[in-house]
Amino acid sequence: MGQLEQEKLWQRRMSKKAWIVWGGWFLVVALSVFCWNLMTENTLWVFVYDAPEQAADLLSRMLPPRWGYINSLYGALWDTLNIATLGTLLGIIIAFPVAFFAAHNTTPSVRFVRPIALFIIVTSRSINSLIWALLLVAILGPGILAGILAIALRSIGFVSKLLYEGIEEINPVSVEAVSATGASRMQVIDYAIIPQILPSFLGISLFRWDINIRESTILGLVGAGGIGLQLQHSMNTLAWPQVSLIVVVILGTVIVSEAISAKVRKMII
Image 1 (cartoon, one colour):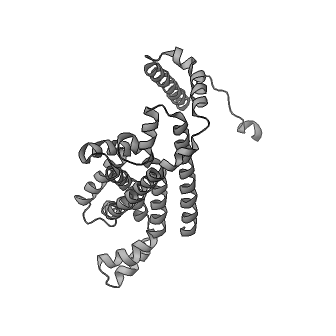
Image 2 (cartoon, rainbow, N blue to C red; image 1 turned 30 degrees about the horizontal axis):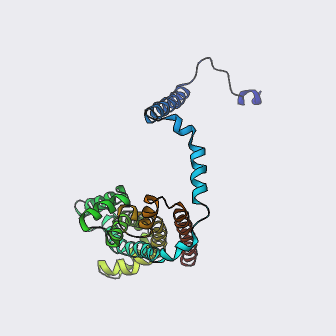
Image 3 (spheres, helix red, strand yellow; image 1 turned 90 degrees about the vertical axis):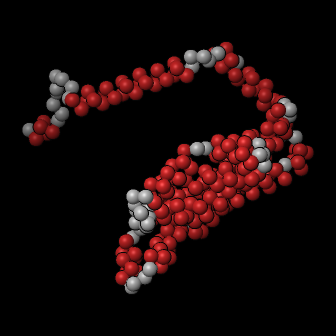
């Protein structure tokens, strides 16, 4: 009898919860179909069907890579690394105080200072580094300075958001213990807060540097310097063996930077 009571009873009508679930799935499917039709309205499917042949033809032109061209990439690769590293460093320097201004437990003013800090974070995270580079190239002219500033402006929001969330999750006991000694606000930050968030901060900074290595490789496409400038030049001149070599160099650089970043984060954390 007990086993029969545990069995699910047959119901003539679906429950309200089941109707809501099925209705939600129906809306998702309908919206997906509508968006697909809207996006593919002007698609020329003849080119899509021909895409595998075109890709194979392009790949045949790219291989083998022009290995002798690598001597022309050292300077551009060095510029790319400088853009990523200096941009990350500048972004971290600005992001550190912004994070403290944005955190509930460290901001000088929840009503005035914190909204400004959150606005800076949202603005930085909402605009892609490529868009920052476009704006800065128009203002400063082409060159690696625009690339460095674009990476920095993009990094501020990323680092600040993760850091201020870490500040808000610190152990308050340490803060109360240091405050009980009569320490000033800055002393509380130095001795109670920073030691708790320092490992996370270093890990976040290294992770952002790893991301910026990837992003800095394409900033040259809009004139912000780096190896992307060589990539754009090679594509404009249809020098496909040079393009394949640049792609290989970018891939190798990203793999090495990711390995270095992972190893250092493991040592720190």
